[in-house]
Length: 320
Length: 151
Image (cartoon, rainbow over all chains, first blue to last red; front, side, top):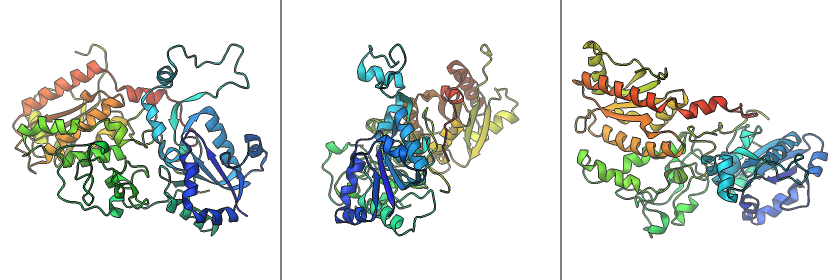
């Protein structure tokens, strides 16, 4: 029976819960695998993991961003015990929402959260066994620390992609290493909304607009990341009248989603007739995009805007 | 002029119809301007993708110049308008990740404005000299290599 491990580093826990979305299929899956390590589900500790022989785990699903030294140590142990390691969810894939912390240095963050009196150094006499693990200087996606075989993207991963991974793993039909579960085409390909002649004369946030039920959300002025984002979610958010925020990461062709979206938006924005007279009005439309980097790089900052301080290459490893 | 000894590296994307021709005219007119830029001719300033600008910075540039036609003169009618909006947005994002927006400069230079091209180059080099080297590239060198990353 294949042995499976699931682990959670710096994340919200939503990825662990996402398995429940498999519904009855989850019972099928659980009856066909042996869970050897899953702290959110069964009482297993680091020592149990370390006691396993090398490559004893067939499939390790790791979710969460790497935020502390302890995160890195744990995923290194998991890597050494596992045949296949899967970056599960947007944090492990790209850095995720916690990755936006990379806009600040570790020291700035500690002061912001704990106030000026916080001392990140260990107490005199050296770190005790109860000392907090050290924060990494920057958050990293999983591939920033260990080789990764597969990616199941999403925040959290859509059930269809989780099911696809298990079905193929159980059938012994895993794709070549480096595969990202999901589609290579954009979310727009799966989206039923109607696209029209796109001209944006305003940019709105989701709470500012009750969108028309049929029309493209980008046409209506919402920043929908659908055009640059990998499909595989059946456009779940746009169908529910919320713009795509890009959680499955960019399509293979889009490259950096921030830069691709800048190009797209610049082409769409208009303030009347194009020309020198419209420049300042166009700038005002562009200014109405609140928090540009937080919106366009919501999940991808540690991996993508290759201009960010800490950016590491995106996954993934070649060969098991 | 060369007070701090720092010579900024510039990548200049110049459109073929206006700014590129203007740069040629500066040369054939034997105008003198600093040789800090690597010119790259593109068909239209509207062809310049934000990813190219970032790639130039990642490759060690301290500044990026995009030269296009004056408003109303674009050979492709609206390419320069598109690039203007694109650069405006890109500058905001660059500022958020700690790259001074002035390092990206958009200039309109016509085919007859060799003198203007030379002046733009002189100004840009002076500005970049005052800004100093791009901090991101310096930090990059100081960071230890990341282990285990398979690109």
